[in-house]
Length: 320
Image (cartoon, rainbow, N blue to C red; front, side, top):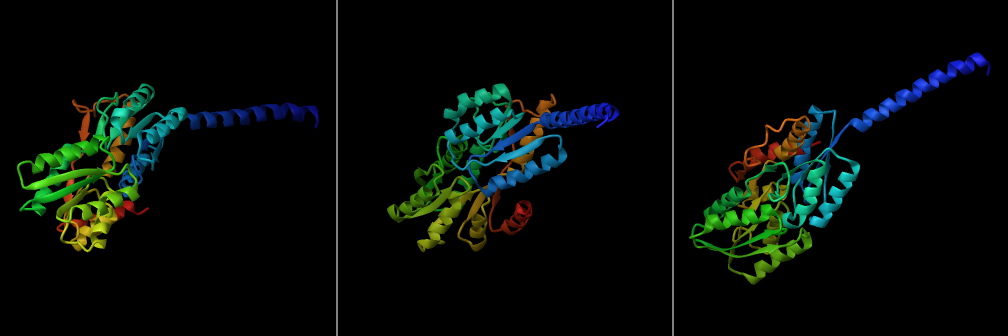
């Protein structure tokens, strides 16, 4: 290689290095936003579709759905720690155990934009809550229970953990709605998001309370398990079912008459609003935050009258 070629090669290499460095810097500047779930379910797949809409509108961000299967404060803590190490710009989380998660959430809020969705942690320093008024949703379910049992009867409720705000609030709403009626709540059974335990809880209740009139699952996976257990016990139609959320088996049970109704949220909106409002905040706009820091998304009752239309719309959301 002669001298003139050597002189020419140096600036070319320098230019290439500069281009690579610029590209790397641009990639590093692309901020990440994450939504952390409290369980794996179709509910969160639908929320993910809302995130996908936000991603199309804001290609300058990376928007991720972090599905946690453990359903505990410790499991969510690990996810949050990992996200902080990655330096994410904003996090939305469905809080599994608010009393035990508040300290960790405050640490997160000090380093990034933090909001809650689906299940709140109002004592934390989260910026806002986006989701359901769960007491109102519980009352809605309670009205459905009273409609299913006009003459009263014994009922049992099933939920992952009463440590979650949404669980406590839904139970409170149901109790409010059935107060002063002949509907009797025998107990609230928890399963710590262990599907085998949830199934056993339901089967045990059907044996222990042969006169049980209605079972209600307060989280998305419990109503399908109730549906299966009631059918397996030959009590379809005899033991009424009122549920929450829009699992495929829940909708099938409404269609075939085994399930009376289910109270559904709008997880698509939870995902979309979580991402877009975090982005607004990062851009200096907090005008979207209500005075009480709660952005409420209405719930809807799905019964035999509207299940076909709702199911068709849902299939469109779940289809890639």
